[in-house]
Image 1 (cartoon, helix red, strand yellow):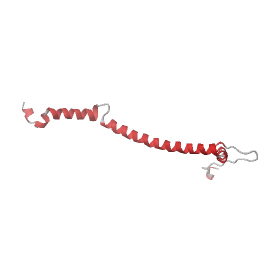
Image 2 (cartoon, helix red, strand yellow):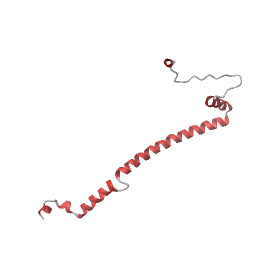
Image 3 (tube, one colour):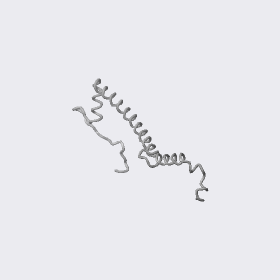
Length: 104
């Protein structure tokens, strides 16, 4: 009984105890605890950034596709660059961009 007299009265209050237990459960023990919510917000932010990136990529690809559909010169340029196609009287020489003279 003497031990209970040294405990401050606000610590013996049932509302304080229930609020403390609720806070512990919400912060640490729940499946949707505070730290999980922070991780999810971080992941959401990363997903939104990648969505913006891919939206820009899709817009660029659509623009390129439209140019390929409408302009034959663009189609020829694309075929030459991407698929290394050539005309009958031409030869293609490929030089790598990261060519290092010290390796030879």
